[in-house]
Length: 382
Image 1 (cartoon, helix red, strand yellow):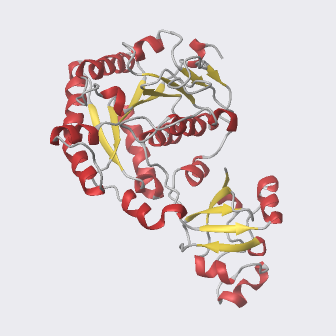
Image 2: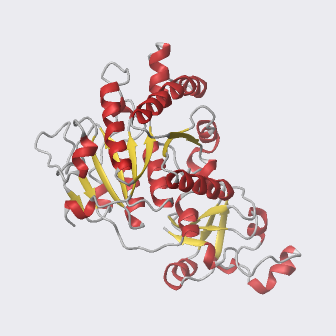
Image 3: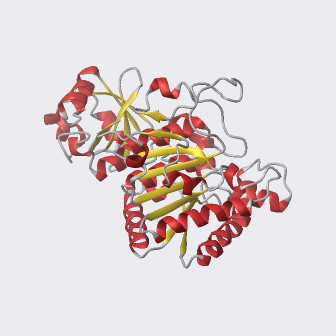
């Protein structure tokens, strides 16, 4: 795929990382931010739809308070509350200069994980874009309970997003964006760590984000939560559903303008051709997961190759507590997750049904919702 075909996009998500929004002294780099705003305004005024995913609220609040770190949930939330207003005022005044309106949207994990809220969010974002408004999205660190939750259920909880790289991927994939641009303080993906290997080579095009590509990721960016690994996970999610991703250096002057002029900047991640209904995307990638079910090899094979429902006879274990209607993780006997689904019975009922035939559900439970623990239409293979 050539560069011009790659950038031929109508709906675009632009993710701006903390390190490209500030100078080395920790203060916001107004010239750079206004350059982003100018470039994005140019895209919108040319008829394109643009959503901005922005970091920086915690960092700005931390600098405003003169803190050396943000250890502790309460301190981080306080910094976010102070910094978010300043961050949004910059976007509002900047886009207003070009006759455009920006809308602030602050999200927590539940805004995706709870399906009713997710559908409402999707409707709102589509309406804003239809009205020519630029949604400016950030994680709502002021009220997010993620840090508290992880403190109690760390290794058992899988959250739909914990950083703005994954958030940008969810927004891009769930709103069917054509292109996600992730701007960081690195030129793109290298075949080795460029900070330790001066001969590392910048990769220009990635056909598929596989295990070999993930092996090239290294470290967490200073000042941010992510690193190349989180960006690769974002790229894998978006490209799986037909979207394109570009990772480029946001500190390059007028980088967005130059990208859409066809300049060979950053690393392109090419789209795959998998077609998955919206509901199955949501089940697989946009929900928080606590409950888990372990299945035998026969059940795994039936799910993977035959698109079958998960019957009680194939279940060999249940982990954690969940309710009917929750999205849970499906593991094989080696405890590897390979699918997710909406469960028809709560965890206690599932434990009672381990290895049972569907004809015996009423005898065991005294009632029967479905023959299957999870029906095939509510299962997503990862």
